[in-house]
Image 1 (cartoon, rainbow, N blue to C red):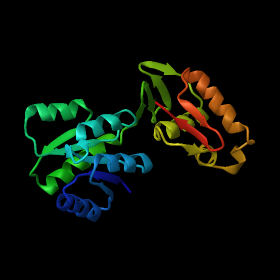
Image 2: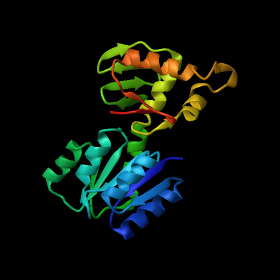
Image 3: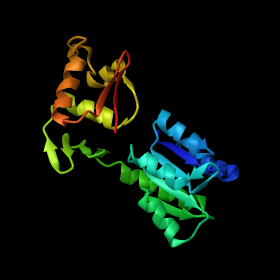
Length: 216
C-alpha cells in the first residue's frame, strides 16, 4: 500500500484529498503545520508528499528543502500563488510538480499517480551515493564502488531509510532472510565494517545498544 503525506492547513481541502486517495486504496497521513509534517515524515515511510506552499508556521519551500536533504520522495506542491517566481522557487527547492489552487481533485490525483509511477524507478539516491537496484551497483557520483550481495542488501536498507535508526534485529531480518544464512552475532558488525571501508565516508553510524543509522 502506498502512503501519502498531505501537509495542508485547509482542513476542508485536506479532507477532500484524503477521501479521494483513500477510496483508491492509499494510506494517508495529514498534517496542518510544517512542524507536524516533518515529524510524520521522519517517523513513517512516505511514498508521496502533497505540500501546501503557505503554512501557519513556515513556508512549504523550507519543508521541501529539508526533505530533499534526506530523501528523493516525490513532492507535489499546492499553492494559491500563481506567480512564475513562486513556481520556480518551489521547483528549485526540490518539488517534482506544482499545481495552483483552485484545482480539480481528479487532476491532482492523476498528477500524484504519475509522480508515483515515475518514482518506482531503480535508483535510490542518498547524498553523493546512488544505488542501482536492478544492476546491484553502487556509485559515488559517477564512480562505481564494487559491492557484494550482502553489502547491496545493507545499502538498499540504509539508503531507503536515511536518518532512521535501524535495530540490529531489523537489519538482520532483511539481510539474512533464511536462518541458516546467519553465522553468528558478529557477522553484522563485520559486514558493516567492510562496507564502511568501501564507502570511505562515515555515513553508517553506530547507535550503541540499539543498531545503526545512515546519516547525511
